[in-house]
Image: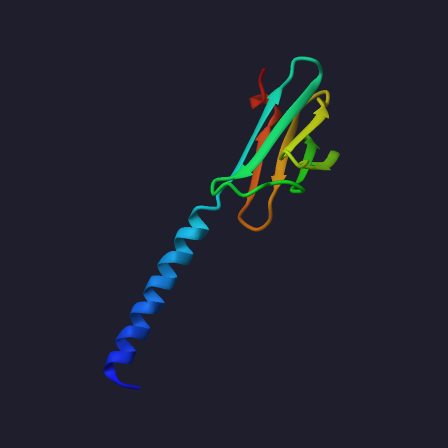
Length: 109
């Protein structure tokens, strides 16, 4: 392989690596939950690049880590559940590197 092709190949690899790194950084999970004030909690999820979070699993856990409610974000990337009594947390389970857990104490009206 000639020097020109090696330089071109290295330049292409550098550009491809930069593009892939930018794509990975642009796919940050987003997750928020709100106390509706009526005994229910609404959570919304998504990704920073605008990708849908529909069907992403959501787990509501008690203080000991046991799952008390299990579901998935709907077509609107929302999940609503009855607020558990006592301490709890809500987890967005978007896969490797896409996990967010919100303590119930931080979920307010």
